[in-house]
Length: 345
Image 1: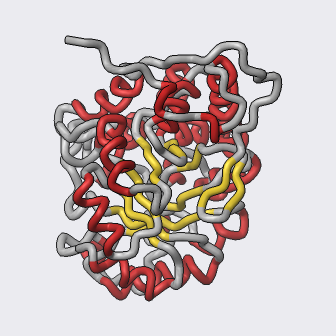
Image 2: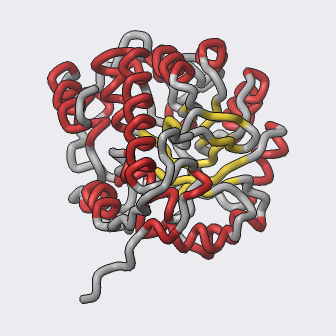
């Protein structure tokens, strides 16, 4: 399996430049985009020695779903830009890796078609300006077998991307944009609603009958408010550095969100995870699982479903290797003591 940098380079060669920039870019000066990866690397590890790690178990269970590892596929938009089989390939590769797919509201294939190919999956939700459209989407997702909803809470407006060249430059057919937007009369109605609030957590749960996790949590007070309104999980995320530039890295935000959750719900994290060591660091900070975004897209662009599976299998194997070197045969053995205190100034 290629290292992540080489895989990204191969994807850059294969994708139109506008598509690569759409996927790879961050907002503003891309400070948060860079900080996400750097923040994990700053966390030093304290391995244990003389532990029996002849067998290492990466399996876990999340909201009742058994998984091969704590590595999930993050929601990303319009996979037809990366591969002709689009989300169908992503779903198959994710299923074959024993992982869980979080399907984007902006999927370029119909929910029902992706569900027929997927293993366990959740549905990512934007609350659109047309709330009837949102209600119809989540009800379709529930009927198709989604096990949870993931409400994106950090996107009342779309952040300005330094590399953005405008939607008109993306080779996205209109039918792909409209794949799940039945009855849409105007594109503006599918924009995110700027008046989305914590009350929408309960509304989504009522509309779908599914547990609702909230994505985009970077603060303890927001975490507590999400739980007060019935969130079934929290996802520490800064949208991959694509929203407010200058926002803190997810590795920096994770500890206070974990503390605020007090073990009541699972806490997940995305943003800059690129190695098994990063997965280990996230678990040591209290995360139950991590989500992988851009590397999955690079795998899709270079190898379709097999490429997606290889990315997930590779990171799972690298996580098992990191656990073994740290003297940790099971995920339940990972604790805060695995991390060294920050160096003194």
